[in-house]
Length: 210
Image (cartoon, rainbow, N blue to C red; front, side, top):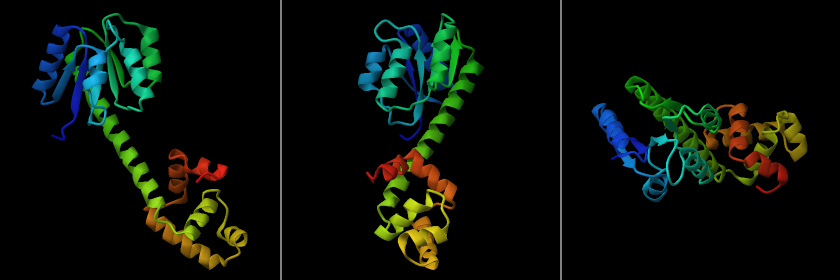
């Protein structure tokens, strides 16, 4: 099954049951966990989906689980639920990337809207990760000369300056530049620079580690 999963983590069984019934009635797939520890043990951050997370729980709080997931590199979008209206907690959660912070008893339409935003964010994050992963793989296909040209291109200098630095003709630079752009499947220098920055390749090049 490749459908997104809406993970529900709440230590109140009546809340879990109500949320599952509500989301399932809208055709969504759900999995529920009674504690943050259970989710950490059995949940799957690699699956498409999002997390509906209770703030106040007995073993590990919602914000603490959020922190642990971030530390593990899990970017699953989160919708927080609370019965306490804790404003400082909600502000901190939003700063750390939470999609929304809803108060119990949650309004069905607000929940659906928040979940849809979370799923849209998940799709966006996955697209970005795929782009970055593909870019890093494509880097390996460059010849040493094409790679060297790329290290100059991302600094923003002109072809004639690159030619002077490499002691080759400007026409040769243009050929290498065209080939590397094609191999990397990118269409602009701005995109090249962005991908090099986001994947850490640019900083590694500057340090001489890549």
